[in-house]
Image 1 (cartoon, protein in one colour):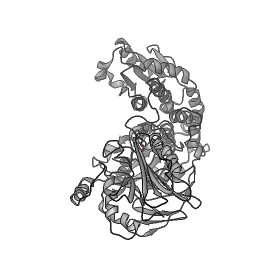
Image 2 (cartoon, protein in one colour):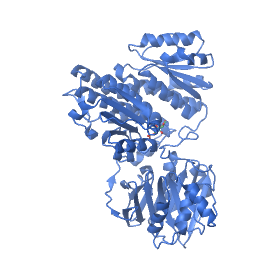
Image 3 (cartoon, rainbow, N blue to C red):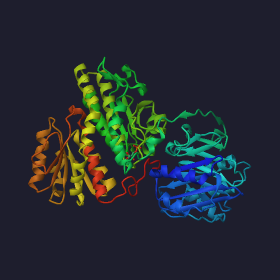
Image 4 (tube, rainbow, N blue to C red):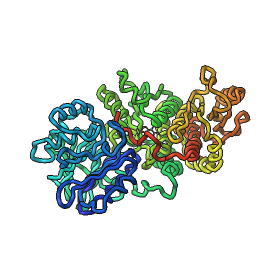
Length: 604
Ligand code: F6R
């Protein structure tokens, strides 16, 4: 959510920053801006409402310099506009600040500064910080920033440039990611490694409460209290090319296609045929501790919450441990009872979602054991949790999640199998499920081959104003996720209901203009699901079934390969990603950057 990029070195900075912004645009795309320290002293800025390409068109020819910071915004305080775009400048135009996060006491500070005669040029919370730094009487930029941060409450990832200190960029983190990239006589900073990997893979991730000073040939890190910290650089695993579109028209299309190899990757090295189980190296939970778990509570937001619901089902089925999922955003506000025998699992593909992080912190404060189910190695949630399972999906650039969702569900299947085999799951069932897991990449490839037919169906349904998604037990979270995907990128209203609940109300919506997408696996609930299709047909509702064989009552059936029934939810969602994609395409939507959304919700 919002992207920051900065550079200090010898190269011409504007093209570098624009390229970085383009790579971060998935984190926010309503306005963008750049500030650079000009060769002849002073700062130069350019800002534009809209996409990075609009900013690029505005950058003047002589916009040269070798130090600069930039930002792409997802509006929180103040509508998208040129004025509200970052960087923000202080009254004298000497200080430029880019900021991710929210300053909670901005209104109060703004009132004080206004009373002191400061004139604000934007409606943003960030401008408050800019003026505080500009007005600080401290001698060094570090001290000016430190003093100002001490006055603000809230979350931030910030980068600060000062005309009087053109040899450095000062950055700080509290709740919003800041990553330093170490180059050859040059330094980068970004809110996400996506902006760094084409230049360097040596990175340092700041902790909350940490600051850094970047110079062209050197950097140092310290706490907001001024104490030096040791920064150990790590190497980013992801290749720069994995951030490219790779010949696809959209990132979403590329990422759906990548599910074959991504699922293969999450399985790799983890299956133990000898004991018909899986090894999860980072779990930090020995067999005795795993046996002592009495409940599992899974927390996540949006798509990750849906993956958690499927995970809860898998854990309950395979390990016979009561398990449930809950939106982390709700959990953290309801003063939850934290039980010492419960294992908590925080799910987040970015590892930065603020609501999930806050839930983890609340749990840790209350002494709970929390595992992470995260895609981004070294992210805040990965670091805050006591252990966990990396989902190894590779970078996901499209705002809506596809391959991360699928890999998270597979990672949950691994966790469930692991916990199951420590408890009462038989060797035979372990073997059966392992064989099922191994088949998944090939089965996903088979589903993806049906894209041309799914595209035709999508075009047929694209003029619907609303759609109903139904599923039963294992199929219900699949319906929830499929309906979210459709809403997010096509803007068609969609409802998801357990098929068993139809008669209790939503059946009233069924009519010829309301298509139902039904998840109908060949499992022990097949007949029940067929009965629901009958009920819909009797009300002339069009039906598209996702099933293991043609469904007579449905107008169309997408047939998916049969898996082990516990693993069905992994495969049944994939054709519905394609359905959402092609519906959105037929409607001419901006698929990778849906309206009002941004990747990684690092604010409340
Ligand atoms: C939807 C989507 C979101 C995220 C949610 C949590 O396609 O991607 O619903 O799943 O914002 O994000 P993470 O998983 O990064 O915690």
